[in-house]
Image (cartoon, rainbow, N blue to C red; front, top):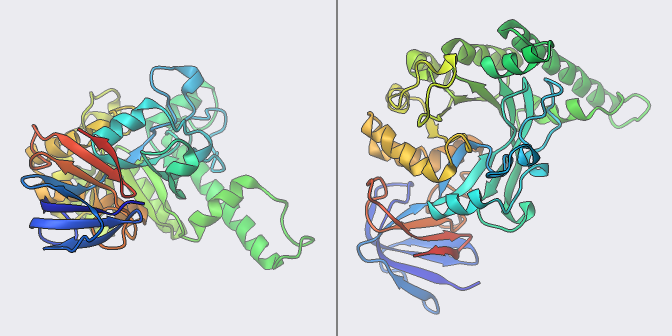
Length: 386
């Protein structure tokens, strides 16, 4: 793979102060060096004087690839609305890797998406981290599973009330989740006690197998929760079972920002750039990210694509700044913060030696509303050029 040296750029490394008039060397798909006067012998050199470089942006919660663009039912593979407990479902089996929304996201500088099942079910299935560049799921895939989707509030209530099944109340949603976690815990303990003896082991159950990484804290619960009471229920159940959890949507998080901060939990906020399409969104505001951040909560900003197309992730960050989020925190919320929240900060989210060479070149400050993406690199390859 060709060595590429970017020269004389303003670099937002997200690993320290902004680097003025600095260089970045890419080699073998990784960042080899960042700093002043880098020797790039044998490298293709690109002069970026007057340009701005950021890490590739990360959409921390979306459904890109699972709801195909412009297609309807045949391409809607994000919600299996036949059973409220489906932890065994895997995003990688539903992603349509050549959907044009990936190219649109890539052109806007979004190089990674955390994508997976929707919120119809109490337990929806496994999320995956994928690059937005690549022909197949295997080429795009960075890690799977990275989280287990669970949902509170209106969505599972509405889906199963319409089927005259449980859950049709918040009580039932919480009860179904607890029961599933108890059964999975019992299954895991029996499996461990069997110590590999098939005669003592429980009958194989793919549902409970899928929840073992959650119980072992290898991946977090990814909790769809808009309303403040649903957020607290997510926290309550996670604490009961000693599990990791991220608070996704967190629409009313600003109403309990101090409580979330005291728990030390991350919030993945959004989609804020939408209408109040249901009751639990009545307190929707772009002020939420700023309030949470100032309270000490680590935040990421999400699109919930296709609710908001992923290419508008940078716009959501800019609107959050307009409504009180500090600019540096806004850039963190779409780069290093989601990388840390999802457990992939060793590979993406900042521009440091050894990390994946995923980066974006802008013609001006990346948070300027007029900013244009000029180049995008994924794994050290220039995949967008204007």
